[in-house]
Length: 473
Image 1: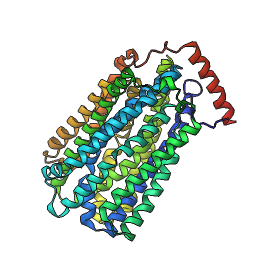
Image 2: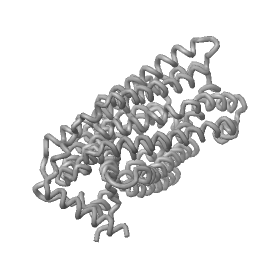
Image 3: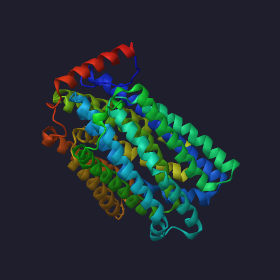
Image 4: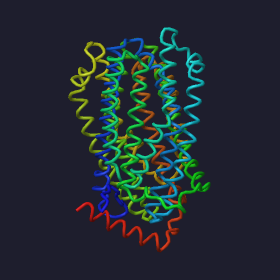
């Protein structure tokens, strides 16, 4: 009997399903944040500040290249979750097989572009000459391994679409440990500098991609694909791309809006930049529960829309709003009571701590709005509302650019306009998401036909559910 972490979210208590799915995601997200910090420490301490700057100079650029691949994996996950909910097992397996074509084509194309255009783009971005060569090297090596990154994210997205958030956690932790070990080995022992850090990341991603694929082949029945299902399907591939490309554009627009805000922050000097950096790192941790819940709701929505159970989606949304409200209130009390102590964990300069503490008080008043973005985004993405993805990204770009450049010019506001711009962007983006949901267009989107499941598929699904229940006992 195969063991499997597949979870049918079309039945059972909505709250328990969301929490059960979110917790492994949350652990993984926090773990990733920690190992990213370790990466920076290794580079900064053992290679130097210029090397750390070189890696940082490629951050937003690499993210833009990654966005298309990761966005497409999101589209694949939406299609699979809805086919799974519709009990259309044949098309679940067909979509999994066709994802190979999508990710291979996209990953190779982005890799090629990244390697070829790394230097011209970094020159265009006016990267300082003293870090240019290291930045080019880091970006070229990272781009060369983009296929492995895309493959790992694709397998993780497929598993999450089938209700399995535990397996991606296992291999994320595995990749993180391997990455840190290789960082120390290649940087300290072999003196490979920023190139060693990039190589370590690629090797870790390749190993995690292969490991998760082999695990899925041995333990997940949906990865056992019949010969007649192993063929290119233009309709399925087009559907995945139609849903995935807007998600990629959404991520890219959000990244661009953050770069625009950073350019305004930089005009206020090093103290404000340090306070903004520290408060942003704290907020990244705060956002992880919202992010995990949003992904859980996306999978829940996809499966239940596929099953034609809109009422369950609405119930799950109501419970998600309650979770966000409670967590937001706790964070509000925490930052108003202990914001100063929390800032001291990240910085030691008194003036930076003072500014950062006040900044946390400003933004924490808007955490509920931030949570609304994540859960409504999760629901609408899970429903396949690709137009919303574009709207969401556009609102964030407009909000950060307009608010930051307007509020900071008001004498009585000044530097505090930086954090107010962030908070108000959350507010208008969250409001836009709620309005989009209230319009109800997400209910009318047909990603899959929930009447398409044949009697054979339904029988297979029932048999599979029986296997899952037995395996879990």
